[in-house]
Length: 163
Image (tube, rainbow, N blue to C red; front, side, top):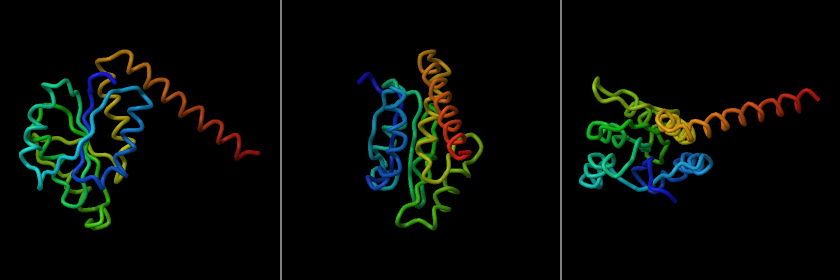
């Protein structure tokens, strides 16, 4: 695989069940990524290093998934010059996911985090690809084909239910 341009991080390996949606989408679009567990609470030094240095390694956008208090996306966004997409994860210690959603969504001015739906890692992958496509015509073409494929799939389903 080529040098990663999208970083996918999560607060715990248990979040992989959700974050796999972003991985699968990036594989489908042939966008190189890296995947790691980076806990804001249990490995803060690793989180600081990742956030401050991802851009120096060629990463263009970071997808950060977290459950519960979900500090990872916001803390990474506070330290990194890159766009950060937060994925709220409904975890075992979550309050129906609302704690994660609000922790990621309610960022102070100056520290934006793009936030997708609860367990919405696939959409995070799509958004990351679209961000990358702004400066990469090949990725833009793959996004256009992906969206065309979605339209075709809906048209087939619409015809099927009419029968």
